[in-house]
Image (tube, rainbow, N blue to C red; front, side):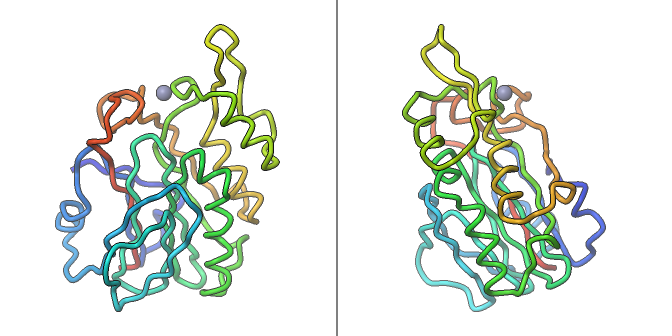
Length: 228
Ligand SMILES: [Zn+2]
């Protein structure tokens, strides 16, 4: 059961995490990892910036949001992706974790910075202590967007080194992973504490579901992190 991991999380004994591959469910991964009695919420990702603080009590109903943080043991934070960027965060000092889903809309509304601030407010995390990992997601060569997307980025203060104009296609190539890195750094995370998994969901072999490549919503991969 293939699972990609971030090198910078590997020395933390109380932590489990992974970036999954296409079609393998969270249940499958947790079963394979021998996890019993894991707590995880039902979620619906909506490309917004709402952050949920999860605890061991579990949650009724469906959580409509794109970021989930916890300092409770056995509570799984996860996001599903198929080109959007999954970002996992860990506070090694205060034992807290988070999972964030960020497509272009999530970047524009800074779901990443809001998640970091939520960890600070709830768990006492200091941004400079955090470790982060930016997971498999669409690469700039595979990601053409229209001028209206670039306008949103410009309006929200992103620098123009995130995109390249493609005049022959009347579009722009956008680098979402670099945007994620920029928002993490803007939130106070040290560049040297951010791992980048340089894998494209669209052009890298068959490990990943890709909305752009497959033109369908049917498949996703799950990305998760929890305190063992
Ligand atoms: Zn690609």
